[in-house]
Length: 203
Picture (cartoon, rainbow, N blue to C red):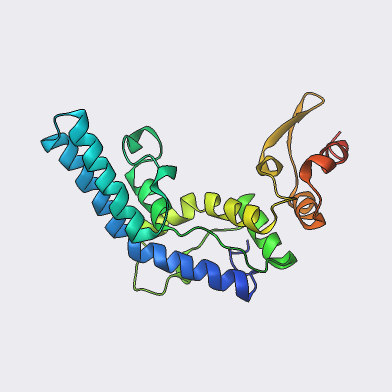
């Protein structure tokens, strides 16, 4: 089985590696801040006003650290979603940027999202780490949202999350194959304009 990244060109590979290494550096700081906020709320916050002030300070500190809008994240009650480690990873990882995404790049990304190749993130990380590195585990598990954003940024017209979802056609549940997804995205045409034609292939 192929490993994620083997088909990536220089532009995408450089951008991804830079972002993953930035996240690897920021992750422990973000995680510690989130855990410290939880401890503060549990032990020292006794009113809604105090909570709001503490929450805003956390949001401001993390925004300054990462350059990201914390309004996109729920910094409290993360246990209701994926947990504090996943939240710390998502906050620490920079947003994808527009870059040259060729056919080989797209193929590599789509096959990774379709779980057709392994997700070994460790080779991207420059700093010393080992197999027990908590960040590596989070990255391999939660990288999908970054890759979807990367496609959305670089293929704003033809990319659609629906391409990766399950569909019911004539009573049967199907998922589009990687080659069909790649063809739609590379076409430059909107997914909605190709949807019915695509469905016919699976009848």
